[in-house]
Amino acid sequence: MGTLIEEIFSHKAGRPVQAGEILLLDVDYIMSHDNTTPLAIKAFREIGKPIRDKNRIVLHLDHAYPAPNVLAAENHKKIIEFVDEQGLPNFFHQGVCHQVMIEEGFITPGAIVIGADSHSNTYGALGAFGAGLGSTEIAVAWVTGKCWFKVPETILIELTGKAQHGVYAKDVMIYIAGKLGMDGATYRSVEFGGEYIRSLPMNERIVFPNMSTEIGAKCGLIEADSVTINYLASQTPAKGPFEAFGPVNPRYEKVIEIDASKIAPQVACHPDVDNVKPLEEVAGLVVNEVYIGTCTNARYEDIEIVANMLKGKKVHPLTRVIVTPASQRIYKKAMQNGLIEILMDAGCTVTGTGCGACIGRHGGILAAGECALTTMNRNFIGRMGSPLSEVYLASPATAAATALTGKITDPREYLKNL
Amino acid sequence: MGKAWTFGENLNTDEIIPGRFNITIDLLELAKNVFCEIKPEYAKNVKPGDVIVGGQNFGCGSSREHAPIAIKGSQAKCIIAPSFARIFFRNAINIGLPILECPEAVADIKEGDDVDVNLSTGEIFNRANGHQYQARPLPNFVLKIADAGGIVNFLKEHDIQDLMS
Figure: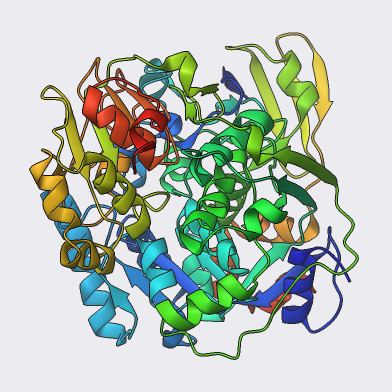
Protein backbone atom coordinates (compact mmCIF):
# COMPACT_ATOMS: atom_id res chain seq x y z
CA MET A 1 0.00 0.00 0.00
CA GLY A 2 1.48 3.26 -0.99
CA THR A 3 2.84 5.57 -3.64
CA LEU A 4 4.80 4.21 -6.57
CA ILE A 5 8.12 4.72 -4.80
CA GLU A 6 6.80 3.11 -1.60
CA GLU A 7 5.63 0.12 -3.67
CA ILE A 8 8.98 -0.23 -5.45
CA PHE A 9 10.97 0.06 -2.22
CA SER A 10 8.57 -2.27 -0.34
CA HIS A 11 9.04 -4.94 -2.97
CA LYS A 12 12.80 -4.62 -2.70
CA ALA A 13 12.83 -4.50 1.11
CA GLY A 14 10.50 -7.51 1.34
CA ARG A 15 8.17 -5.66 3.70
CA PRO A 16 5.85 -2.65 3.52
CA VAL A 17 7.77 0.60 3.88
CA GLN A 18 6.60 4.18 4.19
CA ALA A 19 7.92 7.65 3.49
CA GLY A 20 10.47 8.74 6.08
CA GLU A 21 12.04 5.32 6.69
CA ILE A 22 15.75 4.80 6.07
CA LEU A 23 16.53 1.61 4.14
CA LEU A 24 19.65 -0.20 3.12
CA LEU A 25 18.70 -1.87 -0.18
CA ASP A 26 20.31 -4.15 -2.75
CA VAL A 27 20.74 -2.29 -6.02
CA ASP A 28 20.21 -3.92 -9.42
CA TYR A 29 22.66 -1.81 -11.43
CA ILE A 30 25.35 0.70 -10.58
CA MET A 31 26.07 3.18 -13.39
CA SER A 32 28.91 5.63 -13.81
CA HIS A 33 30.65 7.43 -16.68
CA ASP A 34 33.99 8.94 -17.61
CA ASN A 35 33.34 12.06 -15.54
CA THR A 36 32.55 10.20 -12.34
CA THR A 37 34.24 6.79 -12.60
CA PRO A 38 37.83 7.94 -11.91
CA LEU A 39 36.78 9.19 -8.46
CA ALA A 40 34.89 5.94 -7.86
CA ILE A 41 38.01 3.94 -8.72
CA LYS A 42 39.99 6.06 -6.27
CA ALA A 43 37.44 5.44 -3.49
CA PHE A 44 37.30 1.74 -4.42
CA ARG A 45 41.08 1.43 -3.98
CA GLU A 46 40.91 3.24 -0.64
CA ILE A 47 38.16 0.95 0.66
CA GLY A 48 40.34 -2.00 -0.31
CA LYS A 49 37.59 -4.60 -0.60
CA PRO A 50 36.66 -6.67 -3.70
CA ILE A 51 33.78 -6.00 -6.09
CA ARG A 52 30.68 -7.82 -4.95
CA ASP A 53 29.02 -8.58 -8.31
CA LYS A 54 30.64 -7.33 -11.47
CA ASN A 55 27.53 -8.05 -13.54
CA ARG A 56 25.77 -5.21 -11.74
CA ILE A 57 28.37 -2.61 -12.68
CA VAL A 58 27.79 -0.61 -15.87
CA LEU A 59 30.43 1.85 -17.07
CA HIS A 60 30.17 4.35 -19.92
CA LEU A 61 32.45 6.73 -21.77
CA ASP A 62 30.23 9.58 -22.93
CA HIS A 63 30.92 12.86 -21.14
CA ALA A 64 34.05 13.74 -23.02
CA TYR A 65 34.26 11.08 -25.69
CA PRO A 66 36.18 10.74 -27.94
CA ALA A 67 38.69 12.48 -25.73
CA PRO A 68 38.97 16.19 -26.59
CA ASN A 69 42.14 16.68 -24.55
CA VAL A 70 44.90 14.79 -22.77
CA LEU A 71 43.29 14.88 -19.34
CA ALA A 72 40.09 13.33 -20.68
CA ALA A 73 42.19 10.74 -22.49
CA GLU A 74 43.93 9.88 -19.23
CA ASN A 75 40.54 9.40 -17.56
CA HIS A 76 39.46 7.04 -20.34
CA LYS A 77 42.72 5.13 -20.09
CA LYS A 78 42.30 4.75 -16.33
CA ILE A 79 38.75 3.44 -16.78
CA ILE A 80 39.62 1.03 -19.57
CA GLU A 81 42.50 -0.38 -17.50
CA PHE A 82 40.10 -0.82 -14.59
CA VAL A 83 37.53 -2.60 -16.78
CA ASP A 84 40.27 -4.92 -18.01
CA GLU A 85 41.77 -5.50 -14.56
CA GLN A 86 38.42 -6.34 -12.95
CA GLY A 87 36.98 -8.15 -15.97
CA LEU A 88 33.85 -5.99 -16.03
CA PRO A 89 31.36 -7.22 -18.63
CA ASN A 90 29.22 -4.07 -19.01
CA PHE A 91 31.35 -1.37 -20.58
CA PHE A 92 29.98 0.99 -23.23
CA HIS A 93 31.02 3.87 -25.42
CA GLN A 94 27.88 3.78 -27.53
CA GLY A 95 26.33 7.08 -26.55
CA VAL A 96 24.83 9.05 -23.69
CA CYS A 97 24.79 6.77 -20.65
CA HIS A 98 21.09 7.04 -19.78
CA GLN A 99 19.96 6.29 -23.33
CA VAL A 100 22.33 3.32 -23.54
CA MET A 101 21.18 2.02 -20.13
CA ILE A 102 17.62 1.89 -21.50
CA GLU A 103 18.55 0.53 -24.93
CA GLU A 104 20.67 -2.23 -23.46
CA GLY A 105 17.83 -3.46 -21.27
CA PHE A 106 19.27 -2.60 -17.84
CA ILE A 107 16.17 -0.61 -16.91
CA THR A 108 13.02 -2.57 -16.11
CA PRO A 109 9.98 -1.81 -13.94
CA GLY A 110 10.76 -2.03 -10.23
CA ALA A 111 14.53 -2.11 -10.73
CA ILE A 112 16.72 -0.03 -8.43
CA VAL A 113 19.45 1.64 -10.42
CA ILE A 114 21.86 4.19 -9.02
CA GLY A 115 24.06 6.32 -11.19
CA ALA A 116 26.88 8.75 -10.65
CA ASP A 117 25.03 11.27 -12.75
CA SER A 118 22.24 13.56 -11.68
CA HIS A 119 20.03 12.58 -14.61
CA SER A 120 19.86 8.95 -13.51
CA ASN A 121 16.27 9.91 -12.62
CA THR A 122 15.63 9.18 -16.31
CA TYR A 123 15.07 5.48 -15.53
CA GLY A 124 11.78 6.33 -13.83
CA ALA A 125 10.25 6.56 -17.30
CA LEU A 126 10.13 2.76 -17.30
CA GLY A 127 8.83 2.43 -13.75
CA ALA A 128 12.28 1.86 -12.29
CA PHE A 129 13.79 3.75 -9.38
CA GLY A 130 16.69 5.74 -10.77
CA ALA A 131 18.59 8.27 -8.71
CA GLY A 132 21.82 10.13 -9.04
CA LEU A 133 24.53 10.11 -6.43
CA GLY A 134 28.24 10.70 -6.19
CA SER A 135 31.26 8.64 -7.13
CA THR A 136 32.11 7.54 -3.60
CA GLU A 137 28.70 5.93 -3.17
CA ILE A 138 29.18 4.18 -6.49
CA ALA A 139 32.38 2.63 -5.10
CA VAL A 140 30.52 1.70 -1.91
CA ALA A 141 27.86 -0.06 -4.00
CA TRP A 142 30.54 -1.84 -6.06
CA VAL A 143 31.89 -3.49 -2.91
CA THR A 144 28.68 -3.90 -0.89
CA GLY A 145 25.95 -4.21 -3.56
CA LYS A 146 23.92 -1.87 -1.39
CA CYS A 147 22.94 1.74 -0.96
CA TRP A 148 21.05 3.65 1.73
CA PHE A 149 17.85 5.46 0.86
CA LYS A 150 15.37 7.56 2.72
CA VAL A 151 11.91 6.70 1.40
CA PRO A 152 10.74 10.04 0.01
CA GLU A 153 7.38 11.73 0.17
CA THR A 154 5.62 11.89 -3.19
CA ILE A 155 4.26 14.73 -5.26
CA LEU A 156 1.80 13.57 -7.92
CA ILE A 157 1.69 15.63 -11.09
CA GLU A 158 -1.55 14.67 -12.79
CA LEU A 159 -1.49 15.72 -16.43
CA THR A 160 -4.79 15.76 -18.23
CA GLY A 161 -5.82 16.71 -21.76
CA LYS A 162 -4.16 16.34 -25.10
CA ALA A 163 -1.26 18.59 -26.08
CA GLN A 164 -1.76 21.00 -28.95
CA HIS A 165 -0.09 20.31 -32.28
CA GLY A 166 3.51 21.51 -32.01
CA VAL A 167 3.64 21.10 -28.22
CA TYR A 168 5.82 18.28 -26.95
CA ALA A 169 6.72 16.62 -23.67
CA LYS A 170 9.62 19.07 -23.42
CA ASP A 171 7.28 22.07 -23.50
CA VAL A 172 5.09 20.51 -20.82
CA MET A 173 8.06 19.62 -18.60
CA ILE A 174 9.61 23.08 -18.95
CA TYR A 175 6.22 24.50 -17.99
CA ILE A 176 6.23 22.26 -14.89
CA ALA A 177 9.76 23.42 -13.98
CA GLY A 178 8.57 27.00 -14.22
CA LYS A 179 5.59 26.28 -11.98
CA LEU A 180 7.42 24.28 -9.30
CA GLY A 181 10.81 25.98 -9.38
CA MET A 182 14.29 24.53 -8.99
CA ASP A 183 13.66 23.38 -5.44
CA GLY A 184 9.96 22.60 -5.91
CA ALA A 185 10.43 18.87 -5.36
CA THR A 186 13.65 18.66 -3.33
CA TYR A 187 14.10 15.18 -1.74
CA ARG A 188 10.69 14.17 -3.20
CA SER A 189 9.61 11.42 -5.54
CA VAL A 190 7.59 12.96 -8.36
CA GLU A 191 5.00 10.71 -9.99
CA PHE A 192 3.94 11.81 -13.44
CA GLY A 193 0.47 10.46 -14.16
CA GLY A 194 -2.79 11.17 -15.90
CA GLU A 195 -4.23 10.53 -19.35
CA TYR A 196 -1.71 12.82 -21.05
CA ILE A 197 1.27 10.82 -19.74
CA ARG A 198 -0.39 7.48 -20.50
CA SER A 199 -0.97 8.59 -24.10
CA LEU A 200 2.73 9.30 -24.71
CA PRO A 201 5.20 6.97 -26.43
CA MET A 202 8.36 6.06 -24.51
CA ASN A 203 10.62 8.66 -26.15
CA GLU A 204 8.35 11.47 -24.93
CA ARG A 205 7.80 9.96 -21.49
CA ILE A 206 11.54 9.89 -20.81
CA VAL A 207 11.67 13.70 -20.80
CA PHE A 208 9.68 13.95 -17.54
CA PRO A 209 11.73 11.81 -15.14
CA ASN A 210 14.89 13.08 -16.88
CA MET A 211 14.06 16.67 -15.97
CA SER A 212 12.60 15.85 -12.56
CA THR A 213 16.21 16.45 -11.53
CA GLU A 214 15.76 20.10 -12.47
CA ILE A 215 13.07 20.55 -9.82
CA GLY A 216 15.23 18.89 -7.16
CA ALA A 217 13.48 15.51 -7.14
CA LYS A 218 15.12 12.38 -5.76
CA CYS A 219 13.37 10.44 -8.52
CA GLY A 220 10.71 10.95 -11.17
CA LEU A 221 8.45 8.00 -11.86
CA ILE A 222 5.93 6.90 -14.44
CA GLU A 223 3.91 3.76 -13.73
CA ALA A 224 4.81 0.97 -16.14
CA ASP A 225 1.99 0.02 -18.52
CA SER A 226 1.51 -1.64 -21.90
CA VAL A 227 3.56 1.12 -23.60
CA THR A 228 6.46 0.28 -21.26
CA ILE A 229 6.17 -3.46 -21.73
CA ASN A 230 5.87 -3.19 -25.52
CA TYR A 231 8.86 -0.87 -25.62
CA LEU A 232 10.99 -3.20 -23.51
CA ALA A 233 9.98 -6.25 -25.54
CA SER A 234 10.44 -4.70 -28.97
CA GLN A 235 13.31 -2.23 -28.48
CA THR A 236 15.55 -3.74 -25.82
CA PRO A 237 17.11 -7.11 -24.95
CA ALA A 238 15.52 -7.00 -21.48
CA LYS A 239 13.99 -10.32 -20.58
CA GLY A 240 10.49 -10.48 -19.09
CA PRO A 241 8.19 -11.22 -17.53
CA PHE A 242 8.13 -7.67 -16.21
CA GLU A 243 6.41 -6.90 -12.96
CA ALA A 244 3.93 -4.07 -12.95
CA PHE A 245 4.26 -1.63 -10.10
CA GLY A 246 1.65 0.97 -9.49
CA PRO A 247 0.51 3.08 -6.56
CA VAL A 248 -1.90 1.28 -4.22
CA ASN A 249 -4.10 3.58 -2.12
CA PRO A 250 -1.33 6.18 -2.16
CA ARG A 251 -1.03 9.09 0.23
CA TYR A 252 0.48 12.01 -1.65
CA GLU A 253 2.10 14.97 0.01
CA LYS A 254 0.73 17.13 -2.77
CA VAL A 255 -1.24 16.66 -5.99
CA ILE A 256 -0.72 19.12 -8.80
CA GLU A 257 -3.17 19.02 -11.71
CA ILE A 258 -2.11 20.45 -15.02
CA ASP A 259 -4.14 20.58 -18.22
CA ALA A 260 -1.63 19.84 -20.98
CA SER A 261 -4.00 21.13 -23.66
CA LYS A 262 -3.59 24.67 -22.33
CA ILE A 263 0.19 24.72 -22.71
CA ALA A 264 1.83 26.49 -25.66
CA PRO A 265 5.49 26.00 -26.67
CA GLN A 266 7.72 27.02 -23.76
CA VAL A 267 11.31 28.18 -23.34
CA ALA A 268 13.44 27.95 -20.19
CA CYS A 269 15.47 31.14 -20.38
CA HIS A 270 18.96 32.04 -19.24
CA PRO A 271 20.16 31.51 -16.52
CA ASP A 272 17.80 29.14 -14.68
CA VAL A 273 15.65 26.23 -15.74
CA ASP A 274 12.73 27.72 -13.82
CA ASN A 275 13.03 31.04 -15.66
CA VAL A 276 10.29 29.82 -17.98
CA LYS A 277 8.38 31.87 -20.52
CA PRO A 278 5.88 31.05 -23.24
CA LEU A 279 7.87 30.98 -26.48
CA GLU A 280 6.00 33.99 -27.87
CA GLU A 281 7.56 36.21 -25.19
CA VAL A 282 11.12 35.43 -26.31
CA ALA A 283 10.44 34.87 -30.02
CA GLY A 284 12.89 36.77 -32.17
CA LEU A 285 15.86 36.52 -29.83
CA VAL A 286 18.92 35.93 -32.04
CA VAL A 287 20.88 32.75 -31.32
CA ASN A 288 24.37 31.81 -32.48
CA GLU A 289 23.96 28.10 -32.03
CA VAL A 290 21.19 25.54 -32.05
CA TYR A 291 22.14 22.30 -30.32
CA ILE A 292 19.97 19.21 -30.63
CA GLY A 293 21.35 16.56 -28.35
CA THR A 294 21.58 15.04 -24.82
CA CYS A 295 19.74 12.51 -22.69
CA THR A 296 16.67 14.75 -22.75
CA ASN A 297 15.93 15.12 -26.45
CA ALA A 298 18.16 13.39 -28.99
CA ARG A 299 16.25 10.18 -29.53
CA TYR A 300 15.30 8.94 -32.97
CA GLU A 301 11.88 10.57 -32.88
CA ASP A 302 13.43 13.93 -31.88
CA ILE A 303 15.84 13.77 -34.79
CA GLU A 304 12.99 12.74 -37.08
CA ILE A 305 10.98 15.85 -36.11
CA VAL A 306 13.99 18.05 -36.82
CA ALA A 307 14.73 16.35 -40.14
CA ASN A 308 11.11 16.61 -41.24
CA MET A 309 11.11 20.33 -40.51
CA LEU A 310 14.46 20.97 -42.20
CA LYS A 311 13.88 18.77 -45.24
CA GLY A 312 14.66 20.64 -48.43
CA LYS A 313 15.48 23.84 -46.50
CA LYS A 314 18.66 25.53 -45.31
CA VAL A 315 19.47 26.57 -41.76
CA HIS A 316 20.30 30.23 -41.17
CA PRO A 317 23.78 30.93 -42.58
CA LEU A 318 25.05 32.63 -39.41
CA THR A 319 23.73 29.95 -37.05
CA ARG A 320 25.73 26.87 -36.13
CA VAL A 321 23.31 23.96 -35.98
CA ILE A 322 24.69 20.87 -34.25
CA VAL A 323 22.90 17.55 -34.00
CA THR A 324 24.31 14.94 -31.60
CA PRO A 325 22.28 11.69 -31.60
CA ALA A 326 21.92 10.26 -28.11
CA SER A 327 23.33 6.87 -29.08
CA GLN A 328 25.02 4.97 -31.86
CA ARG A 329 21.86 2.94 -32.34
CA ILE A 330 19.85 6.11 -32.89
CA TYR A 331 22.55 7.51 -35.17
CA LYS A 332 22.56 4.32 -37.24
CA LYS A 333 18.79 4.21 -37.59
CA ALA A 334 18.70 7.90 -38.54
CA MET A 335 21.35 7.21 -41.15
CA GLN A 336 19.59 4.16 -42.55
CA ASN A 337 16.37 6.14 -42.88
CA GLY A 338 17.99 9.08 -44.61
CA LEU A 339 17.59 11.57 -41.76
CA ILE A 340 21.29 12.30 -41.43
CA GLU A 341 21.51 13.15 -45.13
CA ILE A 342 18.54 15.54 -44.79
CA LEU A 343 20.21 17.25 -41.81
CA MET A 344 23.53 17.56 -43.61
CA ASP A 345 21.90 18.93 -46.76
CA ALA A 346 20.15 21.53 -44.58
CA GLY A 347 23.52 22.65 -43.25
CA CYS A 348 23.58 20.92 -39.85
CA THR A 349 26.74 19.49 -38.34
CA VAL A 350 26.03 15.96 -37.17
CA THR A 351 28.50 14.84 -34.51
CA GLY A 352 29.30 11.54 -32.87
CA THR A 353 27.24 10.63 -29.82
CA GLY A 354 27.97 11.84 -26.31
CA CYS A 355 27.41 14.63 -23.79
CA GLY A 356 30.24 16.97 -24.84
CA ALA A 357 28.44 20.21 -25.70
CA CYS A 358 25.94 19.95 -22.84
CA ILE A 359 28.70 20.23 -20.28
CA GLY A 360 30.87 22.64 -22.20
CA ARG A 361 33.56 20.09 -22.97
CA HIS A 362 33.61 19.91 -26.76
CA GLY A 363 31.42 19.69 -29.84
CA GLY A 364 29.67 23.06 -29.61
CA ILE A 365 31.20 25.28 -26.92
CA LEU A 366 29.93 28.86 -26.72
CA ALA A 367 32.05 32.02 -26.78
CA ALA A 368 31.49 35.03 -24.52
CA GLY A 369 28.40 36.93 -25.57
CA GLU A 370 26.96 34.01 -27.52
CA CYS A 371 23.55 32.51 -27.12
CA ALA A 372 22.30 28.99 -27.81
CA LEU A 373 18.88 27.41 -28.05
CA THR A 374 19.14 23.75 -27.19
CA THR A 375 17.17 20.62 -26.39
CA MET A 376 19.20 20.13 -23.19
CA ASN A 377 17.79 19.96 -19.67
CA ARG A 378 19.96 22.49 -17.91
CA ASN A 379 21.03 26.09 -18.56
CA PHE A 380 23.23 27.08 -15.64
CA ILE A 381 25.60 29.98 -16.23
CA GLY A 382 28.55 28.78 -18.27
CA ARG A 383 27.03 25.36 -18.85
CA MET A 384 28.02 25.28 -22.53
CA GLY A 385 31.26 27.22 -22.29
CA SER A 386 31.93 30.86 -21.52
CA PRO A 387 30.31 32.14 -18.32
CA LEU A 388 29.26 35.09 -20.46
CA SER A 389 27.20 32.92 -22.82
CA GLU A 390 23.48 32.17 -22.52
CA VAL A 391 21.53 28.94 -22.91
CA TYR A 392 17.79 28.62 -23.67
CA LEU A 393 16.01 25.26 -23.43
CA ALA A 394 13.20 24.12 -25.70
CA SER A 395 11.74 21.22 -27.68
CA PRO A 396 13.38 19.69 -30.77
CA ALA A 397 10.66 21.28 -32.94
CA THR A 398 11.41 24.72 -31.54
CA ALA A 399 15.11 24.03 -32.10
CA ALA A 400 14.46 23.15 -35.76
CA ALA A 401 12.33 26.26 -36.37
CA THR A 402 15.01 28.37 -34.67
CA ALA A 403 17.71 26.75 -36.80
CA LEU A 404 15.94 27.96 -39.94
CA THR A 405 15.58 31.59 -38.86
CA GLY A 406 18.55 32.09 -36.55
CA LYS A 407 16.26 33.47 -33.86
CA ILE A 408 13.90 31.83 -31.39
CA THR A 409 10.93 30.79 -33.49
CA ASP A 410 7.55 29.17 -32.86
CA PRO A 411 7.59 25.76 -34.57
CA ARG A 412 3.85 25.57 -35.17
CA GLU A 413 3.94 27.54 -38.44
CA TYR A 414 6.52 25.11 -39.79
CA LEU A 415 4.68 22.02 -38.61
CA LYS A 416 1.42 22.93 -40.36
CA ASN A 417 2.16 21.11 -43.57
CA LEU A 418 3.93 18.12 -42.05
CA MET B 1 37.13 30.13 14.78
CA GLY B 2 36.79 31.07 11.14
CA LYS B 3 35.54 33.72 8.81
CA ALA B 4 32.12 33.33 7.22
CA TRP B 5 31.81 33.32 3.42
CA THR B 6 28.20 33.83 2.40
CA PHE B 7 26.42 32.61 -0.74
CA GLY B 8 22.92 32.90 -2.17
CA GLU B 9 20.04 30.47 -2.68
CA ASN B 10 20.05 27.56 -5.13
CA LEU B 11 23.83 27.68 -5.46
CA ASN B 12 24.51 25.08 -8.17
CA THR B 13 27.40 22.73 -8.70
CA ASP B 14 28.54 24.67 -11.77
CA GLU B 15 28.84 27.76 -9.58
CA ILE B 16 30.80 25.78 -7.00
CA ILE B 17 33.13 24.39 -9.65
CA PRO B 18 32.44 24.81 -13.38
CA GLY B 19 32.33 21.59 -15.43
CA ARG B 20 35.42 22.50 -17.40
CA PHE B 21 37.59 22.11 -14.28
CA ASN B 22 36.33 18.64 -13.46
CA ILE B 23 38.99 16.95 -15.51
CA THR B 24 41.01 16.40 -12.37
CA ILE B 25 40.13 14.72 -9.10
CA ASP B 26 42.94 16.37 -7.21
CA LEU B 27 41.60 18.01 -4.05
CA LEU B 28 43.94 20.98 -4.06
CA GLU B 29 43.81 21.48 -7.80
CA LEU B 30 40.00 21.62 -7.67
CA ALA B 31 40.17 23.98 -4.69
CA LYS B 32 42.09 26.51 -6.80
CA ASN B 33 38.99 27.11 -8.91
CA VAL B 34 36.25 26.72 -6.34
CA PHE B 35 33.60 29.48 -6.67
CA CYS B 36 35.85 31.05 -9.35
CA GLU B 37 33.03 32.75 -11.18
CA ILE B 38 30.75 33.85 -8.37
CA LYS B 39 33.35 34.66 -5.70
CA PRO B 40 36.79 34.74 -7.33
CA GLU B 41 38.45 36.15 -4.19
CA TYR B 42 37.47 33.06 -2.17
CA ALA B 43 40.08 30.59 -3.40
CA LYS B 44 42.93 33.05 -2.82
CA ASN B 45 41.88 34.25 0.61
CA VAL B 46 40.13 31.35 2.33
CA LYS B 47 41.86 30.15 5.52
CA PRO B 48 41.63 26.73 7.16
CA GLY B 49 38.65 26.75 9.51
CA ASP B 50 36.61 29.29 7.55
CA VAL B 51 32.92 28.53 7.22
CA ILE B 52 30.67 28.52 4.14
CA VAL B 53 27.23 29.97 4.81
CA GLY B 54 24.82 29.22 1.96
CA GLY B 55 21.18 29.62 1.02
CA GLN B 56 18.50 27.01 0.61
CA ASN B 57 18.96 24.11 -1.84
CA PHE B 58 22.75 24.50 -1.57
CA GLY B 59 24.64 22.45 -4.17
CA CYS B 60 21.81 21.76 -6.61
CA GLY B 61 22.49 20.51 -10.11
CA SER B 62 25.02 17.90 -11.07
CA SER B 63 25.97 14.79 -9.10
CA ARG B 64 29.60 15.80 -9.40
CA GLU B 65 31.49 15.05 -6.23
CA HIS B 66 34.06 17.53 -7.47
CA ALA B 67 31.85 20.23 -5.91
CA PRO B 68 32.07 19.17 -2.23
CA ILE B 69 35.64 17.97 -2.81
CA ALA B 70 36.65 21.40 -4.10
CA ILE B 71 35.16 22.97 -0.96
CA LYS B 72 36.84 20.39 1.28
CA GLY B 73 40.11 21.02 -0.56
CA SER B 74 39.82 24.73 0.19
CA GLN B 75 40.04 23.71 3.91
CA ALA B 76 36.72 25.27 4.83
CA LYS B 77 35.57 23.70 8.09
CA CYS B 78 31.94 23.13 7.19
CA ILE B 79 28.91 24.39 5.29
CA ILE B 80 25.89 25.87 7.03
CA ALA B 81 22.69 26.22 4.96
CA PRO B 82 18.93 26.07 5.56
CA SER B 83 18.76 23.05 3.23
CA PHE B 84 21.01 21.15 0.84
CA ALA B 85 20.32 19.66 -2.56
CA ARG B 86 19.83 15.93 -2.25
CA ILE B 87 22.92 14.58 -4.01
CA PHE B 88 25.19 17.27 -2.62
CA PHE B 89 24.03 16.35 0.91
CA ARG B 90 24.93 12.69 0.35
CA ASN B 91 28.21 13.53 -1.34
CA ALA B 92 29.33 15.89 1.40
CA ILE B 93 28.55 13.34 4.12
CA ASN B 94 30.22 10.57 2.15
CA ILE B 95 33.47 12.46 1.64
CA GLY B 96 33.55 13.73 5.23
CA LEU B 97 32.74 17.39 4.61
CA PRO B 98 30.60 18.48 7.58
CA ILE B 99 27.31 20.14 6.70
CA LEU B 100 24.84 21.72 9.07
CA GLU B 101 21.21 22.68 8.45
CA CYS B 102 20.45 25.86 10.38
CA PRO B 103 18.18 28.51 8.82
CA GLU B 104 18.54 30.81 11.88
CA ALA B 105 22.31 30.98 11.54
CA VAL B 106 22.10 31.62 7.81
CA ALA B 107 19.61 34.45 8.30
CA ASP B 108 21.87 36.16 10.84
CA ILE B 109 25.49 35.55 9.80
CA LYS B 110 27.08 38.15 7.54
CA GLU B 111 30.05 37.87 5.22
CA GLY B 112 33.25 38.15 7.24
CA ASP B 113 31.70 37.39 10.65
CA ASP B 114 33.87 35.33 12.99
CA VAL B 115 32.06 32.06 13.57
CA ASP B 116 32.72 29.14 15.93
CA VAL B 117 31.18 25.80 15.07
CA ASN B 118 31.04 22.76 17.33
CA LEU B 119 30.46 19.97 14.86
CA SER B 120 29.64 17.29 17.41
CA THR B 121 26.89 19.32 19.10
CA GLY B 122 25.76 21.42 16.13
CA GLU B 123 26.22 24.61 18.16
CA ILE B 124 27.16 27.66 16.12
CA PHE B 125 28.44 30.83 17.79
CA ASN B 126 28.75 34.15 15.99
CA ARG B 127 31.48 36.22 17.67
CA ALA B 128 30.56 39.25 15.58
CA ASN B 129 27.25 39.75 17.39
CA GLY B 130 27.34 37.23 20.25
CA HIS B 131 24.42 35.20 18.87
CA GLN B 132 24.26 31.44 19.21
CA TYR B 133 22.34 29.06 16.96
CA GLN B 134 21.56 25.36 17.12
CA ALA B 135 21.76 23.30 13.91
CA ARG B 136 19.27 20.50 13.27
CA PRO B 137 20.62 17.16 14.49
CA LEU B 138 21.81 14.79 11.76
CA PRO B 139 20.28 11.26 11.57
CA ASN B 140 22.21 8.65 13.52
CA PHE B 141 23.58 6.76 10.54
CA VAL B 142 24.74 10.02 8.98
CA LEU B 143 26.62 10.82 12.19
CA LYS B 144 28.31 7.42 12.00
CA ILE B 145 29.60 8.25 8.52
CA ALA B 146 30.59 11.77 9.55
CA ASP B 147 32.33 10.51 12.70
CA ALA B 148 34.38 8.07 10.64
CA GLY B 149 35.44 10.97 8.39
CA GLY B 150 33.48 9.67 5.43
CA ILE B 151 32.01 6.46 4.09
CA VAL B 152 35.31 5.16 2.74
CA ASN B 153 36.88 5.23 6.18
CA PHE B 154 33.71 3.78 7.68
CA LEU B 155 33.85 0.79 5.35
CA LYS B 156 37.50 0.11 6.15
CA GLU B 157 36.44 -0.69 9.73
CA HIS B 158 32.82 -1.80 9.37
CA ASP B 159 30.33 -3.75 7.34
CA ILE B 160 27.78 -1.58 5.52
CA GLN B 161 25.04 -3.20 7.63
CA ASP B 162 26.56 -1.51 10.70
CA LEU B 163 25.16 1.79 9.42
CA MET B 164 21.65 0.63 10.29
CA SER B 165 22.38 -1.03 13.64
